[in-house]
Image (tube, one colour):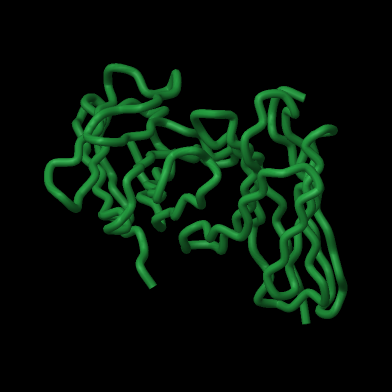
Length: 110
Length: 115
C-alpha cells in the first residue's frame, strides 16, 4: 500500500447504531497514525495519535486500534449520536509529513 | 482552550495576483505547517516550519510559495502569482514537537478562489 486509504467513503447510520471505519496505510517507514474528526466549517479536531502496534485508544464512545505490521487502523463509534456526524480523517506520519486519506463521511440520523 | 486561527476565511483573487494567507498558531507550539485540500481531493502537506526556517516541503511547494513568521505570533503563506489550480482550502496547523507523535492542531482554513 503506497497511499493512505479509508473505507467506506461514506456511511449513513441510525442513532444508537455502532459503526466502524478502516484506515489502511504503508507499514514501512511508519512513525504514527493520526485520526481527526472534521465537521463542516470547523477545524479538523485531533482524536488520537497512535504509535505502537496493538495500541488501543479511547475517548468517550470513540475508540481506535492499530496494527502496524499489516498497516491498518480501525475507528469505532459506539451508540452513534447525530452530533457524531462528521468526516473522519486518518493520516499516517512517515517521518516528515502527515499523509492523509480521503476520509469517511458519517451521517447519523435520529 | 487555545486554538489556531486563520484569516481571511475566504479570499477571492485574480490569476497572477499575489495572496498572503495568515495564521496565528497556538502560542507555545514550536512547529508550524501548511496543508491544502483541493475540492474533492485529499488534504495535502505543503510545508513545515521550525526555528524560523523550512524543515520539510512537498513537491507542491514550488518557488511560487513562501512562508514566513514575521513576528512572534503570525505565520504566513504567500503565493506570488496565483494560478487557477491554486484554488483550494488552505489549512494552517501547529504542534508542540515535530516527531509526528504529537497532535497537530488545525485552524478552520482559508478558502482561496482564483478566478
